[in-house]
Length: 444
Image (spheres, rainbow, N blue to C red):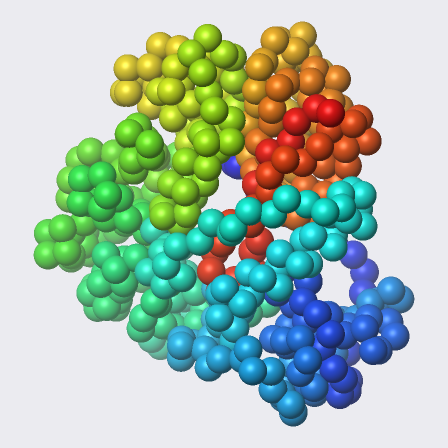
């Protein structure tokens, strides 16, 4: 899951002045209200089923309109008051107006309908969603900075905006990251070279060795006085501070010298400052554990891990005794995964570099796989699916962060006679529009 999916831009007309009143019927898989009473259908952010709302239209197309709820005239019993004082401005969360369990139920119904409509999948065997604590879960975050005004802004980007929303707290961050926000702000506001600051990446590796990693993007060298202030912050907060000069030039400034990382199923995974990692540690553990339960890796089996990243699935599978082949397009991630395999003394694990948008050269080797796990980026695994359908491994676990591309990809297997044996949502990003899922699929 290294690639970043960017949907193609489309031409549309924006008319923010248009307002209308209508009823929200259902939610889509992103938690957005769907108003079918109006023609064309309206997707209304902030609405819940059964609510009568006044909606401001922001986008009009021939087949649908988009808008935002500006006033709830008749509220649903499911509506709750957002806990964050920045919810109306910050772009980090979208669904704090509903309880996470309630939102998951609506999302599951929407995904079920989507899979029925796009892939022809009926009567799906849904398992309980994988979910953890909806607060204090986010172990990695990017903090935005804006030094163009009189006062430095430290926070997150706004809703549908590049403006920085100045924040004092964020309850979805893990407690160690929350505790760092105020002293971080105090230090940054005292720096002379504020305009040399880009953004800050935070990672909570406290489950490994107690270290919080802070990576500060800088566009030019900092003065010694500013560096000393950052060193003082690292000492007081017991964190590691790195300076990112761009083009993978990372300098260690202060704090512990070891790499950041985390544990999963008895395996230690190290990661670099710019490496992809699942931000929800609790749900990631549950996801990997369920993958192991569903695939049941056995000694002597060959299991392929497509879109393997740094080895989040590969290492636990290999630790269970299977021969594992991890496939990843990124040179950096392949090197990282090999290093993690060596760190854990796993010699039944191989990583290869391959662009899985052009996977044809892998067909012969993939045909030897007993089982497969794949965890693609939002663009999905369209090019891989025909190869899986032909090679017919005994079982495939598909982990998806985009229900739409999952539905498209699943249809290829179902048309080839495969069947969905298990499927479950994952609440990897509570209070947001993100919907992730995993499914166990086997040949018929």
